[in-house]
Amino acid sequence: MRKHFIHIKMFLSVILLAGTIIFPVSAQDYGLKKGKSISLSIKKQSEKDNRTYFNLGLMSNYQNLNGTSINIISDVVHQKTAGFQASGFVNIVGNRSSGMQVAGLANISGIKSHGLRIAGLFNISGRSAYAAQISGIGNLAGINQKGFMLTGLINMSSVNAKGILISGMSNIAGNEQKGVAISGLTNVSGGNMYGAQISALMNIAGDSNKGLQLSALSNVSMKNQGLQMSCLANYSGDNKGLQLGLANVSNKCSKGVQIGILNMNGDSCARQVGIINLKPQTKTQVIISGGNLNKANIAVRFKNKIIYTQLEAGMILGELTDKVSVTGIYRTGLAFPLVKNKLSLNTDIGYCHIETLANKNIPDRLYAIQPRLGLEYNPLKKLGLFIAGGYSWTRTYKNNQGYSRNPIVEAGLVFF
Image 1 (tube, rainbow, N blue to C red):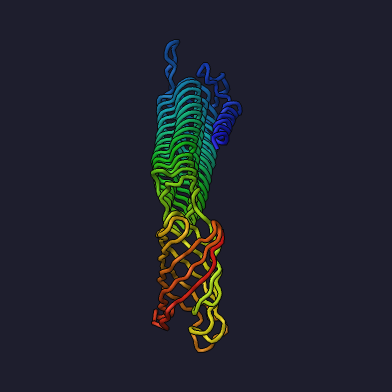
Image 2: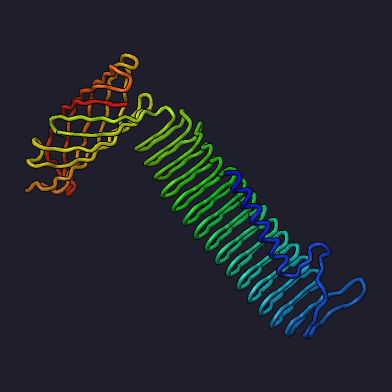
């Protein structure tokens, strides 16, 4: 997994390097080559001080801006800007831009940018971007992004991202993310994530999640020290927080909790709350049984020391319905050892869904609550026998009315 995040960092570096090649910004001498200017300007020019206070034209190329510059095509400033810069296509600053930049295509700063930047396509900073950046496609920073970032596709920084990041596709921080990242598809942090990642598809923290990961599909972190919440699956190499989803997977879970339909963990001490809980010590057993109410059943039981859960399918005929009906049952219970590895006392409670099929004058669907108490004997290591008794309260789904009450007597075989 760590190799993938190293690849992500390399990818970010390549993208940002390509940006500095495409746009002629020199980060070494902090300057740009002289070019043509078709504009009118008010400026101060001397050997030590070369400033433009007001500039208006078709395209401009000059040293420093301390005021306002408006151009139809482009505005190129060799060193620094402080004020307002606007152009129909592109604004380029060799060193640092401070103030506000507005461009139809792109705003580019060789070193740093401070203030509000609005571009139709890209806002690019060779090192760092601070405060607000708004673009149609992407906001890119060679090192850090801080403040508020809003874009149609991607916010990307090769090292750290801090503040509020909102994108239509992805927010990517090569190392650390602090704050809130909201995206239409994915949020990626190569290192630690402090704050929140919220996405419609996936959130990834290459090292630790120390806040909230919330997604419709999945969340991934090498170490979860906060909350992972998804509609489908959560994965963490070491879960020390809370995983909440349909499926939760972790290699370790010594201090964490997993809550979901399916919980899987490589740590025998994991704390799990779910329909199916799997650990290294979990025994997966097949049970075949029958009784007075459910004539034939087949079940899969997941047993962890004294706690077990069980999924069961069966057939009812006789006492409850005249013709065959089918059932789906979920049980959870406790197995108390009476004789080690030989005899145990099982107690559980089950929820039974009943499809009455071709039976007439009976509701199409019923449900029942079924507590049971039984003895299980294991003459062999992978073979057991059990007998159980209990009671079934059957009710209708519609109006939740009582339908019948029946005692339960069941017996069967346990394999594996």
